[in-house]
Image (cartoon, rainbow, N blue to C red; front, side):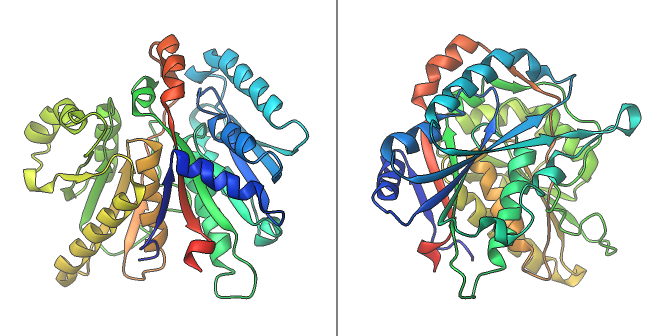
Length: 375
C-alpha cells in the first residue's frame, strides 16, 4: 500500500514540525487555504507563523463563490473577520489570490463545477518547482474543492516520482473539532449528483455490469444525504462506516441510532456489514477501505469483480481516507473505485457563540502524503 507505513502528526507534533521549518534556510513553503466563514480558517496558518516566523512562505488563498442563493452568505461578517486576521498573519509574506466559481449556468442548465475548477488551480508540475513543502489547509474548504485539489497535486507529484527531480513534501492540514462539525449544518442538498471530478473510477462509463458496493463514512445529521446518495447509486451491498473509538464514546451509537430506521427497516443492512474506524486517523480509514474493496473484488472474481463507491458524510479528517483510497485505486487496473459526495446549497451554524467558544479546543492534524518520509 502506498501509505503503509504513514506519517500522521497532531497537536504539539505539528508545532514541532513548524519549528523545524523555521530552522531550515533552504525550505520554501507553499501554504494553500480557503477563504470562508469557518472559525478554524486561520488556526493552521497562525500556528505556522508563530512557530516559524522566518520561514520562506508563499500563501495561496482560494476564494470560492457559492452563488447568490447560498445559505452561507449570511455569514459574510465571519468571512470578513477571518480575512482581517489572515491579513495580519501574512504581513510581509507573498500572497497569491485564486477565485473559484463553484457553479456554472443558470436555471435548469445550472450545474456544480467547483470540483472541476479546483483541479485546474495547478496545471503542471512546473508550478510547484522550487517548493520544498506544500501544505493544503482544508479547514475552511468544502469537500468538493479539496478532494479535487489534493487529487490534482498528488497526480502532478506522481509524475516526478522515480526521477531526479526533488519530490516536495505534500501535507494536508486540518483543525479537527467534532463538536464544531456537529453545529455547522449543511443546508439544502444538490438534486443533481455526480461523481467527484477526477475520482469517477470509470463507474459511470464502465460497460461491464458489475455489482456495486457502497461504503459511506457516516457523521451526524446526514440522513438526507445518505438517502439521496443511495437512490443515485442503487448499490447491491452497503457497508456503513462509523467513527469508533472517538472522543465521545457514544458517538458511533448516536449516529447509528439516527439512521436505525433507514438501515434496519428500509435497506435491511446486515449487522455484520457495519464497520468502525478511529475518529482521528484517516490512514486507518484508508486501510479499512482498501482491504474491504480488495476482499469484495476477490470474492466476486467469478463475476469479474465489483464497482466500489465511497461517500464521506463525516469529518474532513476521516474524509481524507476516502480520497487516499480512490487515488491509490487509480493505479490498480482491475479496481473501479469512485467517490460520490452529496454537496449542499450552503451551511447553517447552530449556536454561533458556542462555536466561537469551541474554536480554541480544536486540534491541528497534519496528514503527510509525499516527500521525505517516503523517499
